[in-house]
Length: 242
Image (cartoon, one colour):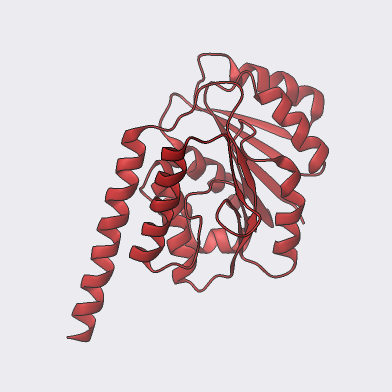
């Protein structure tokens, strides 16, 4: 199954080489697309150097830091245009274990349209998170699933594998949200199309190197958009009934 791994990066100089080597080991035939937002710490330059050695790695240098959503839209657009059968998305900081990718790809082979690496199914979890972060993340996902009516326990996980045709059908290039709201928007689109979404357990491990991109603004944006989408859905259903 021709596979692309889309890897957004910003200031991941301490992780990028190790991640690229790990991915080449785990999915040796995959095309790795590094979408770098002009990292001032030289992440893009390091990626280019490793790419020249490993092969099968493409480094896209963007003009500046424009957000996770735009980075994924760029990478997914390239993968769709080039006709990959499977598209994997993940973080570069090793919070997502590359060794799980073959399990996710196997689920696609078995008929899933999208596979989510989930912290909130049996066998999944988080490591070294403070209590407030665990509560906020789990509550946020419960709220999202309830408000939007999607039967996915981890709507904000960025560790995913998509069937290329399923991803093309929801056309992520037409989404508008950023941050974790972007990930939720894709889940909602997949769910509304009746796509088969499977969750596989992962252990999310906090980064050892570099700085987290999580912020209060990103969380607030996600909750506001989820609420707005939920209200909009209910209003449309009411108008349809009347």
